[in-house]
Amino acid sequence: MCGSESLNVYYDEDVDLSVLKNEIVAVIGYGNQGRAQALNMRDSGVNVILGNVKDSYYDQAVKDGFKVYSIGEASKQGTIICMLIPDEVQKVVYETEIQQYLSKGKMLVFASGYNIDFGFIVPQKDVDVIDMFPLTFGTQVRERFVKKQSLGGFMAIGQDATGKAKQRALAVAKAIGCTSGGTFETTFAHETEINLYLEQVVYPAISRMMVLSFEVLVEAGYPPELVVLEMYLSKEPSEVFASMAELGFFEAAKGGSTTAQYGEMTRAPRIIKDDIKKTMKVHLREIQTGVFAKEWALEQAAGYPLFNKLRKQGLEHPMNEVEKRVKKVIRP
Ligand code: NDP
Image (tube, rainbow, N blue to C red; front, side):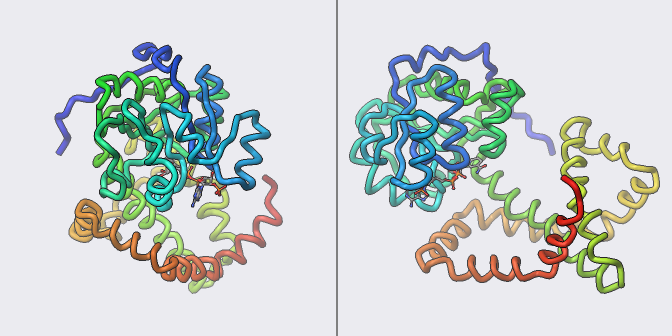
């Protein structure tokens, strides 16, 4: 069951930041990842400029002291171009504002392999293409860097046109802070597909269970306020996951009472039966074969009708009202 592939992991001491001394890093986008990565790289001594549409993110970047340009101008000046805008807009922005400024030896950096893995973006052959995926969301990328806490990442080389893609990629990883905890070498496909699988199977299964459990308990007459409070407003689930990461997936269960452990171990296989793996494999296959990516691209092209309908449905669920009531009375 366990893979035998050896892991290539790189830490701060393995990486030479001076590789970036003559580079200009153009960060495209100043959102979750963009702001965090730009600030971290600048604090690491890297020459960072910003490319953004002229709006509130642009103003924030100016306020933070960056030289901010249009996306085209930043791509023209940058020797390393970091694509830190949402995956679904990258293809159009790449084709209309970036591609014409890519010249031999430049490097394109993605923070998700999605557009390369599924062939939405096919860069020219004479540029380096890498995936530098921090293993957490943007605010944490910045907070952990500032607090000198460890941060990890995945790094993949898609194209090595210069023969130096790996040194450049690792230097970017170190400048962002991702070699403090360890940057793991992987492929675009593995990074992208594991990430999509977790987003589409594991986390939705947990959240769907929570919504259905709210309904079951409230229908059975339990106070909805107490249900949401104990289920997630207490933040206990995040503490359980943090404890799994600290102590080990099964070891962490010992932090609960023996009653809790017995209930969990005996009931888990009754609720989620092993044959669910057949369904899980169907979803994995949809990811691997690009069926999901195609469906999502068609949804975007149609103006997000299903996305908006489902989001509205979620926001109309009675849990939202109960949550608001409880949040008014609990002290943060
Ligand atoms: P955000 O949604 O935070 O990106 C916002 C930025 O993108 C803003 O600067 C915004 O500019 C710009 N933007 C949005 N739409 C457009 C457009 N049509 N044209 C030009 N610019 C646009 O993105 P994330 O930081 O969440 O994601 C960036 C990358 O990082 C993605 O590849 C994502 O998969 C990856 N990633 C994200 C993680 C996360 O925690 N969020 C974790 C790991 C990887 P404006 O609105 O001003 O136009």
